[in-house]
Image (tube, rainbow over all chains, first blue to last red):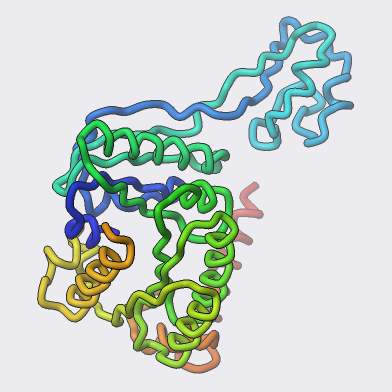
Length: 270
Length: 48
């Protein structure tokens, strides 16, 4: 993603992996705007108003209310049943601040990104927010592309990351788990009718498994875009906080990513 | 314990195999790691 960021023209960047954001480590963003991300609610009992009637403890499905009428914020799912039924109106139900989102400048263009608090929920909503802000950056700066770094897996944040995208590039590895996850993401993309392409990273670690992934992709109508070799330059570049081109533009990895990007531009007509 | 950047480990993992089985030198290291974690957890339980 960082390498693509340095190759693409007229683009904004978006880190949609809000649970474990990492694009900023290489982009070194200069944060221009900082906002709270608010989502969900947690019940809070006011001891002065509470008569300890016990109705909330009976109704709470999450067993989040202790014998001395304190709400455990981790157990509380924010359903609001206690708040709604409390006869004394002794329960407040404030909105949670679960993270922050940012608009930044980077050496490769503007970027929308976020950081979700530890053990916080609603990461899908935050992904949707960050992508919307990314799109605004594209429009405001007269750009033509939003490059989004999506999270791994197939859960809510992935669904939020790929819905409505022009295309999804699935980067997988020739491993048992790589193939498993790739199959599921390919199904997800097909379900949302987003064109998918696949690239096998570290292909030469296990060429047999890599070829099987490519054959599977073709059988599902997922375009096979190209292979990336196992190249320690990637790791060294990451440690330095650089893209592969800034670290070593003549490495085998840099060559492969450049070819991959050219094929992607051609395949999508960018 | 330190696990190095190792192409061999990556290849073993890619086949869905475990390094403690394919690279026997890792077996004792993981047994030791498990033992040290158990001791830490036991120490914590006692101090409660």
